[in-house]
Image (spheres, rainbow, N blue to C red):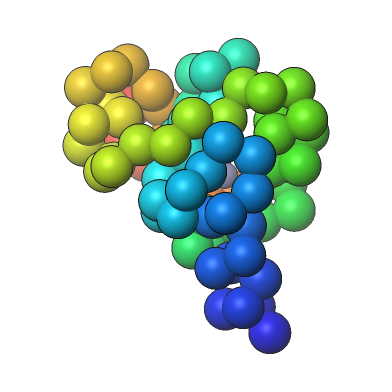
Amino acid sequence: MEEARSILITYRGNMKGQRYMVDTGKREVHDLFNVKTNCQINDIMEDGGDRPFPSLISAHKAGYRDCIWCIGGSRRD
Ligand SMILES: [Zn+2]
């Protein structure tokens, strides 16, 4: 069921099936295929701060940090 939920979440809010979602408020990027409760994706989407990103690298280049829950937070440039 985890997989089905993950696929569904990529079509909510402003997402159109992309794997990576940035939170424009906290300036963090989330991996929707590995999303955790602590990511509080619902709150981000309710605030309208969710934006799709094509890749993790492009999100980093745009200045977003990795979410510590779904990505790990080990990469901080
Ligand atoms: Zn996250």
